[in-house]
Image (tube, rainbow, N blue to C red; front, side, top):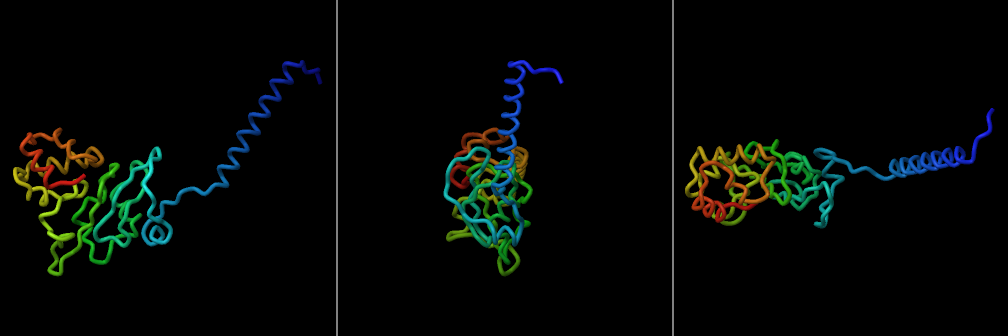
Length: 195
């Protein structure tokens, strides 16, 4: 075997140290618990509400209405409304999930309101005042948007389509990009919608 020069020994030692460092980090990474994104009953048993703080790659959403554990939750970017409902313990027995778009992407700061089925089969108003309270922009249906002064069926459908195509909306001001919404309509929307 040929003799190794001093510079070759230094290079081999540096490569060995780098491999040891990478191996140690890989082992340490395997030992740390990975976040679990369980669905349904498993999520209800394992997930907790948390305190609000900034972390890269996460969204903070408020899940309210007919869910088992309403609260504020941190969700990974790219999560859907269905993921947020699951994180909140799943739908309550009287929830009317067909009234919201479970496939819509979540936006940071969004409120997801799951409506409750009324005794007669309709949707019950959530909270005191029912229709008088603000409507959640993240979960508003075409019918709910049509109740706002100045919003007809075409504009309501355009708002829902815009929201779904853009993965949700974090601000009412984003609606000025929707065709058919002018300054007067924006004021009506600000009065009746919440992000």
